[in-house]
Amino acid sequence: MTSPSPWVDLQGTANTRDIGGLPARGGRIRHRLLIRSDNLQDLTRADLQLLLDEIGVRTVLDLRTDVERTDEGPPPLAAHDHVEHFPLSFIPEKELSELAASVVLPDRWDDGPVGAYLHYVRDRPQSFAAAVRRLADPAAGAAIVHCAAGKDRTGLLVAVVLDTLGTDRELIYADYELTNQRIEQIFARLAASSTYAVSVNRIGLDAHRVDPGTIKTVLETLDDWHGSPADFLRAGGVTDAELDRLAERFVEPD
Image (tube, rainbow, N blue to C red; front, side, top):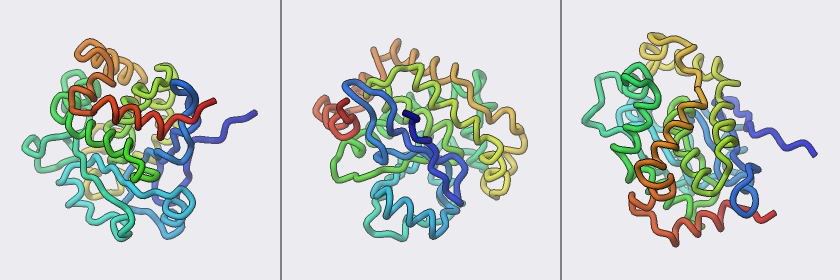
């Protein structure tokens, strides 16, 4: 039997997909429970209908910085009272330059994306913990997590969640790499935004492609530092009871 496509095709995004269906400890990830995406600023009425009415999105985990959110303005989902928004930046605001986009690009770090990702986990473990705590809450409904491109900050959080749920790492790397299938569209969207255009054009399209070796290195570093990504979450304050609830919500037994 052919597995359904992970892509959620919206008119206003380029990199939206459902992590449902991936194998996890004791079963598979439930469909339409966690959607990962790039920026949601350009969602159309039809997009909103799909996300709100068909998928049932009730939680938005927004990993952008305060500067990005201010520059971009209120997102369309913010107009819906039954959707809760959680701003969970991975970057301390005091580190931001005048152009926020430059902070999240790989050339800011001596070791590229790996360096950026390791700064995220060192600087904002509480944001990872808060995201997982919300996902574990039955009141969360379906959640959508996003940043600007939906590949770095979003990709790292999703990888930590999947690893914690027991998804095989090779499958985590493959999910992370799927972004490359839409990288041209992602780049075009960022290049058309006044918030990101200067920075993304400065480093060019190829620098935005993701390398599965990046997420492999970061997960293995979390193993070295904490014992596992789940232990990293525990160090950030997530309890075993919350991790159990996360698994209960997300894993559908085979």
